[in-house]
Image (cartoon, rainbow over all chains, first blue to last red; front, side):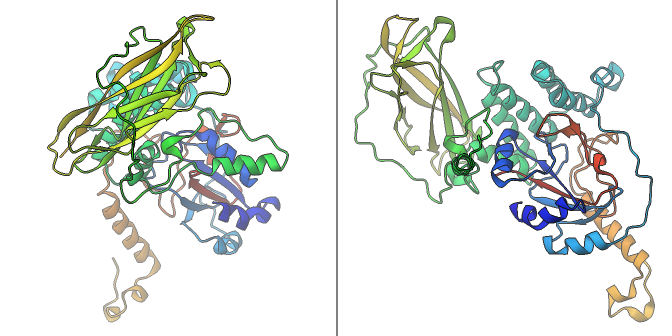
Length: 395
Length: 89
């Protein structure tokens, strides 16, 4: 779309043409950074739920003064012709200004207990209810799915809502895995929906990715800072899968170290001082395919747990099943530069299922080893925590 | 479809505009009906999967990226618009 930006900038400034964007992203703030980087000032509508119902981006529409679509995917060089054309007036221009639907009026009554009524209510809560209505939105999508479990659109949107909550203070530990589960299920029902497919690929294995997604962010920030501006801040910093380059073969890292605690002697973190959240993307794969595991480590805020940054960094050992391959069996998360800190740390790895594996559920065992301290000036301990990742192989 | 008998060798030339449009609509319906439309009870507020040339772009009210305020294409009536649906990746 920088192509469109360049082609239309002068026309926009002269007031001859209005550019409008609709973005299909889970994290719209990243697009705001993109716009700042490219100096684009189009009005942008955020459509994380894909209410527009499109199945691929980009799509461009030339729309006349009355809102009528005159061409789809026109080339930028045909703009002059579009602007010169006088279209027949078919209806009045005046319309009421945009306002969101009324939440109170929309709540489905018992009489209209339909998928679309509940889904529309859920959409409205998600879009206009703010963080406080997100739980209710999720419940309303679930109500719709109880009426029709095969409603793929509702499944996709429920996934978007789960992931949105995962990025807020009100997160449930399994929100991300639930989001991926809904997206995976939705895509199985409608494999041609590329907006949904991108949502999985964004967090998924490198083999399945069409492009890195958010690898431009560092460059954008450098350029913006060099101009003397402050880069627009992001709510969730993209990392791991979201910036990783696609690969054509399953690449593995050679590990020369031996298993750190093969005999299981290191004391388990039973409190736990570090809460671990996991997600496997996608939630089901076929034999021979890869999945990406996301492991998050959150210091327990209630007991003021924190990392001891003067010791060995957090490590993760992955014990693969026979025939399964991990791209890295022994991972490390770097320490922060200060003595102690309590940030969330994340490790990601990929695992590939054997070509000849039968459908079913498999457990990939891993364990984390870390130095963690209790309370302020409290004792620092070396602890182990076991992690079981469930991988489902489908037909 | 209206076809003049003398024009069979060159189909496109022989269709008058109305017939061509009608043909296009019938063809489009045939294509679009293969796409699963999820609910039969969808009201006008629910957007269909496809928007076609000649139709009004559906009135979808969405939050603006800059301030989260409600915005839709109808806010720009009276201007010619290029609507670009995209993502920043």
